[in-house]
Image 1: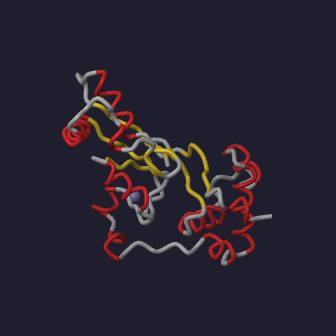
Image 2: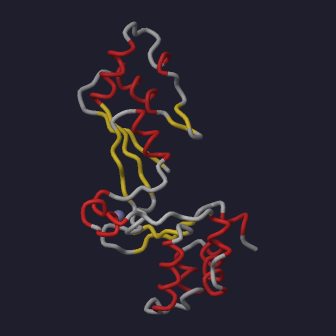
Image 3: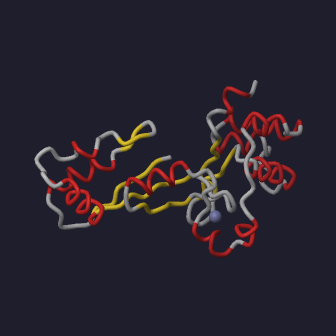
Length: 190
Ligand SMILES: [Zn+2]
């Protein structure tokens, strides 16, 4: 998960400092206690109000659970930030608006170990290939053998995506940028 902070223009340097301290998030928590964001400010509540009025966070998620594409979520304050980061069922706003599947409920993912155990031999082989080859070039060469029209392989890749084991990062023209996978998988495959 990565994120960026968006700050409105025309804010004082002091507020910019406070804003970056407010949003600094590392290893699962906010680094600065709300009381120490700006030592000089007496009225903390007012300071937080100014911070959240003039800035917001944009969290980047690698894959929507329904369309598998990258998406961003705007968060207004720390509380929303934590909620969104902890939410395991995140779906992009466009799928929320238009996908009938969203109404049916998002399929829950099994724990990774179980998902891996459920894979067929060929699915497992392709998962290992994606994890070990990493680069798009090598995946195209050694898994697809340069035949990107191979529907059987795409079917397997879709299955792996549906199980939440891998995702595909794409650019705005829907071209593949890279293949990603959950790092926990490294410990679970040979
Ligand atoms: Zn989506």
